[in-house]
Structure formats: structure tokens, C-alpha cells
Image (cartoon, rainbow, N blue to C red):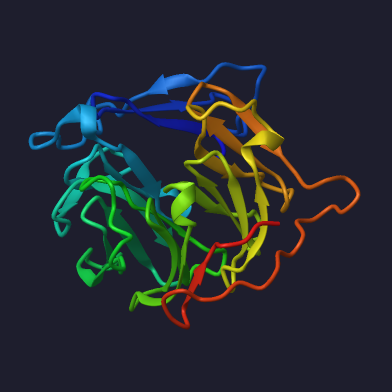
Length: 295
């Protein structure tokens, strides 16, 4: 938001801090102040049917930060960020919601859930536009019936990156046509997280065996595979669970590990960009790539 910090607490209550500066911008010289509207209303998610220990809280802000779409694992609610008033409650997923992303170009919201379903909601009236289930081939079934599905819009605000432990997939909104899928090698384990690079040309994906795969965003071709030995001591219990792209360096990213460590990774200085791996054969169909090789 530029001049504020918005947080979602474990008890499903949102907290908003604002900087009391002349220009309203964030600064390290002045501490932010916890803010509430005059009526004292708190933005609180509906957790009546939610087991908090199994919840995956997440939220997304609309264009100009006018509205907040949030969930603490169950139903998700639309709040007016100025008054904290609940405008609407959207229903469509069969299980807990685990991902939200807005497109200001298409004027839609895409949500994802543990029901391996993607839903597109129109921001004009907040009605459901489309819904699709992830295609999971036989033999690639999830190890958990409640595995989360994450979503992220590309910079073009049309293509959606869907991240599930079984795969990475690219969809085109608002119809949610599946353009391509990528599956990690079965010997490597499941996908733990993935994200677009800051310019949208690459996808960084973390895998449960400790490796990190760098993919070309337009084709899901494997460009490089970073082995766990390159950044952590050999320890089968430590692996990355979250990954974030640098906001201005397109080849740099950070990973958070199960042991609490955080590593920032970039290509070797000699190259400056991630190398291209050998061509890979499709294992399921023309729109699917299998990560059988390494860079």
C-alpha cells in the first residue's frame, strides 16, 4: 500500500498500521500507528467452520487498495479497506481457500483452494465467472487431500500461475484455459512453492528434495536446476518451503527453509543469467513438460 502495513493475524483479525507523515509515505524515522475506523469495527474473517491449525490464511488487495479480499482458511470475505465494512461473502470452493490474486486488466479475482479448484470472480457484482479443477494425471495424485493450491497473475494480468504440490500450470483468464503443465521428477518429491520473476520471464520453483528449478515462463522449459548441495549441507530433512522473487533483479530470488534459514540465490557471476538445460521430452501431452533433466 506504500504508506501502510496490513497484516492478518492467526485469530483471523486484520491489523492496519499507517504512517502519520505529511506525505503519508512509509519511513524508518517515524514508527507507524495502529489504525482503526471511528466505529471500532475490526476486519475479521469468518472462521466458524474452520480448523485454524489447518488453515492457510491469505489476502489480496484490489486496484488502488480500495478493497481487501481475505480468508483464514474457510469462506472468504470482501472488505472496504476505508471503513473495514464487509461488502460481500463469496462462496464457491468445496474446501479451504488457499490463494487469491487480482487482475486489474480483466477486472477479475482468481481464487484457489485445497479442493484443487480455480475460480474466477467478476469484480462487478462479485459473481463467479468460471471454475476449473486442476488436471492431475494418474500416478501423480497428491499425498494430502488438503494440499494447498496457490495462484499468481503474470505481469500481463492475463496468464495465471497455479502452484500445487503435484505440478505447476499456466492458465489463461478469464476462461481458465490450461495452456501447459510441468511436473517435477517423481524421485524429487513434490513442489513446495513457485513464483514468477520480477519481469515475468522466468518461474522459480522449489522442490521437496531441496532442489530449485528455474523455468522459462512462456514454455515451462527447464533452464537450470539448483541442487541442495549448492546452498545447504547435506540434510534430507531441510528443504525450501517458500520462494520469493527479487523485486528488481530478474535472476535473483530468496528461499525460506524448514530449519528457519533464508538464502538469496543468483546465477554465477560469469554468466549473469540462468543457463538453458537440454531439451526435454513431453511425458503426458503437447502442453505438458516433465522436468527430467538438470542444468
